[in-house]
Amino acid sequence: MIPIRIIARVAIFSAIIYVLSWGTSYLPNFNLIFFIVFSAGFVWGLLPGILVGVVGMGLWTTFNPFGAAMPPVMIAQVIGASGSGVVGFLFSKLNWKENNFLLKLKLSFMAVICTLFYYLLVSVVDAWLFQPFFPRLISGLPWVGISLLSNILIFPLLFNVTLNLYNRECVKP
Image 1 (cartoon, helix red, strand yellow):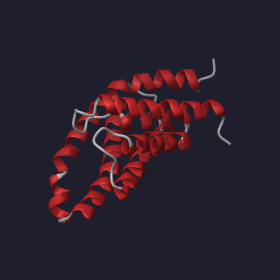
Image 2 (spheres, rainbow, N blue to C red):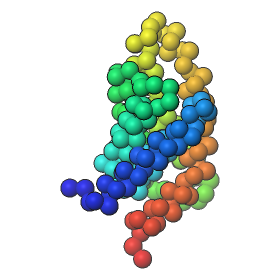
Image 3 (tube, rainbow, N blue to C red):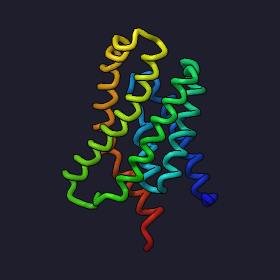
Image 4 (cartoon, helix red, strand yellow):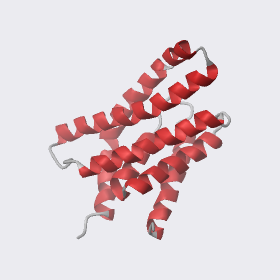
Protein backbone atom coordinates (compact mmCIF):
# COMPACT_ATOMS: atom_id res chain seq x y z
CA MET A 1 0.00 0.00 0.00
CA ILE A 2 1.37 3.40 -0.99
CA PRO A 3 1.16 6.04 1.77
CA ILE A 4 -1.16 8.97 1.01
CA ARG A 5 1.75 11.44 1.23
CA ILE A 6 3.52 9.59 -1.60
CA ILE A 7 0.33 9.60 -3.70
CA ALA A 8 0.14 13.37 -3.19
CA ARG A 9 3.77 13.76 -4.23
CA VAL A 10 3.21 11.64 -7.35
CA ALA A 11 0.27 13.87 -8.25
CA ILE A 12 2.28 17.06 -7.68
CA PHE A 13 5.27 15.83 -9.68
CA SER A 14 2.97 14.68 -12.49
CA ALA A 15 1.38 18.14 -12.56
CA ILE A 16 4.84 19.74 -12.59
CA ILE A 17 5.75 17.61 -15.61
CA TYR A 18 2.64 18.77 -17.42
CA VAL A 19 3.13 22.46 -16.61
CA LEU A 20 6.85 22.49 -17.42
CA SER A 21 6.19 20.61 -20.66
CA TRP A 22 3.85 23.43 -21.69
CA GLY A 23 6.53 25.93 -20.73
CA THR A 24 9.20 24.24 -22.84
CA SER A 25 6.96 23.11 -25.71
CA TYR A 26 8.54 25.56 -28.16
CA LEU A 27 12.08 24.44 -27.33
CA PRO A 28 12.40 21.32 -29.49
CA ASN A 29 13.40 18.26 -27.48
CA PHE A 30 14.40 20.28 -24.44
CA ASN A 31 12.32 19.11 -21.51
CA LEU A 32 12.61 18.37 -17.85
CA ILE A 33 10.44 15.23 -17.87
CA PHE A 34 13.36 12.83 -17.67
CA PHE A 35 14.93 14.63 -14.72
CA ILE A 36 11.67 14.99 -12.78
CA VAL A 37 10.82 11.31 -13.17
CA PHE A 38 14.42 10.35 -12.31
CA SER A 39 14.20 12.50 -9.17
CA ALA A 40 10.92 10.88 -8.09
CA GLY A 41 12.48 7.42 -8.40
CA PHE A 42 15.60 8.59 -6.58
CA VAL A 43 13.75 10.17 -3.65
CA TRP A 44 10.60 8.02 -3.19
CA GLY A 45 11.45 4.70 -4.77
CA LEU A 46 10.65 2.47 -7.70
CA LEU A 47 6.85 2.53 -7.81
CA PRO A 48 6.45 6.29 -7.21
CA GLY A 49 9.11 6.97 -9.85
CA ILE A 50 7.33 4.81 -12.39
CA LEU A 51 3.96 6.36 -11.51
CA VAL A 52 5.27 9.91 -11.96
CA GLY A 53 6.52 8.89 -15.42
CA VAL A 54 3.27 7.18 -16.38
CA VAL A 55 0.91 9.87 -15.10
CA GLY A 56 3.04 12.89 -16.07
CA MET A 57 3.82 11.68 -19.58
CA GLY A 58 0.30 10.34 -19.96
CA LEU A 59 -1.08 13.80 -19.26
CA TRP A 60 1.40 15.51 -21.56
CA THR A 61 1.07 13.13 -24.49
CA THR A 62 -2.72 13.25 -24.28
CA PHE A 63 -3.29 16.96 -23.66
CA ASN A 64 -0.41 18.76 -25.34
CA PRO A 65 -0.85 21.86 -27.53
CA PHE A 66 0.09 20.02 -30.71
CA GLY A 67 -2.54 17.29 -30.34
CA ALA A 68 -2.56 13.85 -28.80
CA ALA A 69 -0.08 11.24 -29.96
CA MET A 70 -1.28 8.13 -31.75
CA PRO A 71 -1.97 5.33 -29.24
CA PRO A 72 1.12 3.22 -30.08
CA VAL A 73 3.38 6.29 -29.80
CA MET A 74 1.60 7.33 -26.61
CA ILE A 75 2.22 3.92 -25.05
CA ALA A 76 5.89 4.06 -26.05
CA GLN A 77 6.22 7.56 -24.58
CA VAL A 78 4.63 6.54 -21.28
CA ILE A 79 6.78 3.41 -20.95
CA GLY A 80 9.90 5.33 -21.99
CA ALA A 81 9.30 8.12 -19.48
CA SER A 82 8.62 5.69 -16.65
CA GLY A 83 12.05 4.16 -17.32
CA SER A 84 13.63 7.32 -15.89
CA GLY A 85 11.98 6.50 -12.56
CA VAL A 86 13.59 3.06 -12.62
CA VAL A 87 16.98 4.61 -13.39
CA GLY A 88 16.55 7.13 -10.55
CA PHE A 89 15.67 4.35 -8.12
CA LEU A 90 18.67 2.27 -9.17
CA PHE A 91 20.94 5.33 -8.94
CA SER A 92 19.81 5.89 -5.34
CA LYS A 93 21.13 2.43 -4.50
CA LEU A 94 24.60 3.18 -5.91
CA ASN A 95 27.43 4.99 -4.17
CA TRP A 96 26.44 8.51 -5.21
CA LYS A 97 27.82 10.32 -2.15
CA GLU A 98 31.23 11.16 -3.53
CA ASN A 99 33.28 14.01 -4.90
CA ASN A 100 31.55 16.55 -7.06
CA PHE A 101 33.20 15.74 -10.41
CA LEU A 102 32.56 12.00 -10.22
CA LEU A 103 28.94 12.59 -9.18
CA LYS A 104 28.38 14.93 -12.13
CA LEU A 105 29.92 12.37 -14.46
CA LYS A 106 27.61 9.64 -13.12
CA LEU A 107 24.60 11.94 -13.43
CA SER A 108 25.51 12.68 -17.04
CA PHE A 109 25.65 8.95 -17.69
CA MET A 110 22.23 8.52 -16.04
CA ALA A 111 20.91 11.26 -18.34
CA VAL A 112 22.19 9.34 -21.35
CA ILE A 113 20.55 6.11 -20.15
CA CYS A 114 17.19 7.80 -19.49
CA THR A 115 17.22 9.61 -22.83
CA LEU A 116 18.29 6.62 -24.93
CA PHE A 117 15.78 4.29 -23.26
CA TYR A 118 12.97 6.73 -24.03
CA TYR A 119 13.99 7.51 -27.59
CA LEU A 120 14.80 3.94 -28.52
CA LEU A 121 11.22 2.95 -27.77
CA VAL A 122 9.55 6.04 -29.20
CA SER A 123 11.69 6.23 -32.34
CA VAL A 124 11.18 2.58 -33.24
CA VAL A 125 7.41 2.83 -32.78
CA ASP A 126 7.29 6.10 -34.72
CA ALA A 127 9.36 4.67 -37.60
CA TRP A 128 7.24 1.52 -37.66
CA LEU A 129 4.04 3.56 -37.91
CA PHE A 130 5.14 6.21 -40.36
CA GLN A 131 7.47 4.22 -42.68
CA PRO A 132 9.81 3.90 -44.46
CA PHE A 133 11.36 2.52 -41.33
CA PHE A 134 15.10 3.22 -41.59
CA PRO A 135 14.91 6.66 -43.24
CA ARG A 136 12.36 7.73 -40.60
CA LEU A 137 14.50 6.31 -37.78
CA ILE A 138 17.66 8.00 -39.07
CA SER A 139 15.94 11.34 -39.66
CA GLY A 140 15.03 11.48 -35.97
CA LEU A 141 18.63 11.17 -34.76
CA PRO A 142 19.37 14.92 -34.66
CA TRP A 143 16.37 15.40 -32.33
CA VAL A 144 17.62 12.62 -30.11
CA GLY A 145 21.00 14.36 -30.05
CA ILE A 146 19.42 17.63 -28.89
CA SER A 147 17.62 15.81 -26.09
CA LEU A 148 20.80 13.96 -25.10
CA LEU A 149 22.83 17.17 -24.88
CA SER A 150 20.16 19.03 -22.94
CA ASN A 151 19.71 16.17 -20.45
CA ILE A 152 23.48 15.84 -19.99
CA LEU A 153 23.37 19.48 -18.87
CA ILE A 154 20.11 19.31 -16.89
CA PHE A 155 20.87 16.30 -14.67
CA PRO A 156 24.13 17.58 -13.10
CA LEU A 157 22.91 21.18 -12.93
CA LEU A 158 19.64 20.42 -11.13
CA PHE A 159 20.66 17.46 -8.97
CA ASN A 160 21.21 19.70 -5.94
CA VAL A 161 17.46 20.36 -5.97
CA THR A 162 16.87 16.61 -5.84
CA LEU A 163 19.41 16.23 -3.03
CA ASN A 164 17.65 18.95 -1.07
CA LEU A 165 14.34 17.11 -1.48
CA TYR A 166 16.02 13.80 -0.61
CA ASN A 167 17.45 15.28 2.59
CA ARG A 168 14.03 16.65 3.59
CA GLU A 169 12.17 13.44 2.76
CA CYS A 170 14.55 10.61 3.53
CA VAL A 171 17.25 11.68 5.97
CA LYS A 172 16.22 11.38 9.59
CA PRO A 173 17.44 14.25 11.83
